[in-house]
Image (cartoon, rainbow, N blue to C red; front, side, top):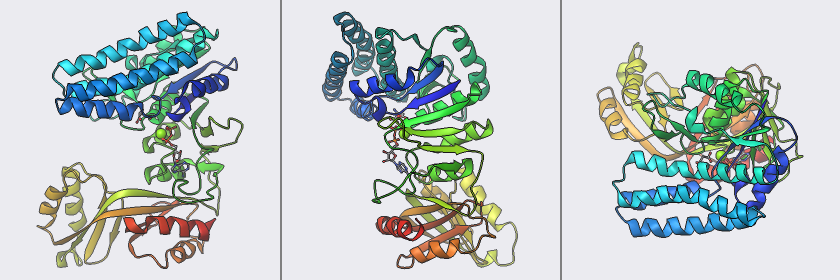
Length: 436
Ligand code: ADP
Ligand code: ASP
Ligand code: MG
């Protein structure tokens, strides 16, 4: 069975939902994972913000506007009056639940319930529409099988045990519709897989049922060789190796959520990135095969902080790096890039929640300097060290741009460079010109 995930823009209007229906209704049994309609999760975040600030009027104004938007979608999506009324009544339950929080205490727990309503509404609408046009579609509630553990990691055993049972109980369905992004935590409370997490839902589902393929349908024809929001004339990359895709997603290629590759890779399930607006375009296939001697793509990750620790104590000593890494570990802060010399080490982080505490601890070991507002530029492809010439090309493209760190050789698939945020656009354009 295939798993098809449609993102926010792909279900962003009544017409887009009808387009999705055309793509998924081909007689094959499949699981369809849906995001919230585009803009909805941001609106729910905004509503939560008003509720945290104890401003129920502000929240109500936005809730009413959002419900009006959904009423218009319903009027356009369904053809019979009966279905329109049924859909409005169905979504009114979600809106009444959101409204109930304007009258009560608002905490992280209630916020997660509010954030879950986007996916609950989009899936309800698409499922009702499919039923109206006579398709055998059923809702499989993500809250009944998608679960995270105490470390916020997916509980894959639980998912593997519960999802197949739910599918089995609806054996005759042609289409199983389910929510991306939302889940429960080990205490049974509603939770989520973080923003953009519907891609992750799709690959966890794919892994749990050993899917034949995971398809991520979005608003562009696959992974492009550079960020299409910044560089003109980018082109789709037709094939990517799992590792290459993971590096690109992690280092800023927004088309794919960074966590989405691992479940697919572990289970060796190909991932295809496809375009809802152009369903026949070949898109990108991500699988377990690398192409030699090609540079595939460039991506950029914003909001990076670089920390340099210089110490005479590092000279000819062992154990220094361990002490440095332990500090980051104790504050549960992942390190992205690292470069070392005999008297110093530089690392980058993107989570600065504990920056001050980390700096205070690092100062016990050496002189510490910090560069904020930096960007990691990541070049991905077959960068195996025996292949000569690729590093030169990359560095040549960066000849006019100050580079703070370079990391190469960590994997066979990437070179990363740290630059100032203000140089990002210039760097991405120059790399595209030099490499593609
Ligand atoms: P969805 O809502 O379907 O999950 P996203 O907005 O998360 O879609 O991802 C698709 C967007 O990712 C594209 O519209 C594009 O602007 C952006 N993007 C950033 N980098 C890339 C890239 N390298 N290739 C393709 N799209 C990219
Ligand atoms: N709706 C969620 C978000 O906007 C999840 C997703 O779209 O992947 O982040
Ligand atoms: Mg996305």
